[in-house]
Length: 208
Image (cartoon, rainbow, N blue to C red; front, side, top):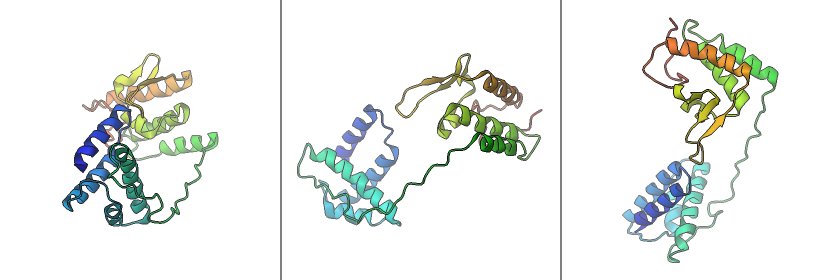
């Protein structure tokens, strides 16, 4: 019963454009735990029992809130599902860190430091210099940059595929960025690896 409710809930989330990976993994763990105890519906006591198995307070709260959102969804169709209170395990003490906005000088220093990475004869120094520069001038997420393929470099810019909402977008590039990217692409193509990734994050071949 619960696993069937979860399957429908997960499918709806994906149709709406959410990746729903971490949440799905947690909810599968919860439903397996609850069904092993014979539960057919979400029960507050079982949610708290399962949530408190996590090793840290933040993980326990995350478990609770993940099941709470699931319970709210399925309770809309069947009131036999119980919805745990958001503060059932106490109030969160989590404080969001203040993001650091890099200045132009800091970005330049970071890129200079990248050129000193070892081994100096590999593509690694140029790759990280290019990566940091692209992140700075385009505003890409790091996951988007690492997912770029050689074929994603188009005449009009960079094609970002499979974004947060499963859509693609084009990132136009300034002429100076094109110059730096062309220099990297020239070296990237010379290394001759079978991997088509633009950024060789795991392997650092020697540039011939």
